[in-house]
Length: 372
Image (cartoon, helix red, strand yellow):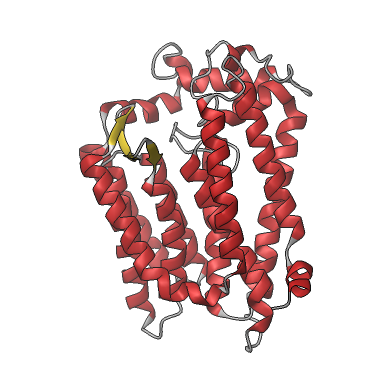
């Protein structure tokens, strides 16, 4: 494809929204760690991750997305092997074993499993095999990853994968009978998880979610402080670096899990509205690509990326507002975390690749009227 055609075909709106969200994340990271030096380890690591993520974004964007089909199984296998490895030799941080430390660099394999699942689901549902076989295989691919992640334990990421799988197969037109069956199976799994897999502190999170004020200095502390921070920002916030909840460390994990609460405290309703608007624009552009794609693989890739980012956003935002139990999920493109940033940019690059190379597919556009 000629360079001029590439420049003309790029989705510059999506690229600009992505860049602005990343910049907002860097600003909030600096603000919430302003007690440290300008080039603090957190900012330095995030900057390195941004450089790596930008390279990944550029490389994947210009590779025709059709070539990703052949790498779906190998990528999934590598991601699964990394999950198994982290369960054996991973570094224990705050009671969970979800990170590998390689030469001083921390990697979170579950973040890259998001990319692997999008690829494997898109590949699987374009195979010429009976529907029920594809459904069963998809369940095996997803639930195997969920089981390993739940044992870390990382219940937030496990919940993300379960919701992604359910939303994806529902999008593909699964029958209501199958939905009911899956719902019953899911309920059974949740009950078993409560009984055998959830640690005591995770059960406390769920119980506290129902009544956080019942233990404001204990299990309900995080939720209560997050709600206070969000509410205290009013319309325009207290100003960058001037949020008492985040600056005085009343709000825990103010630069990761609860960065939206920090944003609301320091930039107010206007700042939160800016973030939601940019993220909505990004999701709209992904959905636009899904609606004009000319082949099933491209459609499934775009829908997979859309669902992962949408569900991740709602889970993380809901935690900050006290609407769901604390899950530990970072906010894509905003929260501190190199693995999250690189994996999110990789997902967005896949959509950019579809947008760039879709016109060269010689098949009629896929009919997805039920998306509108």
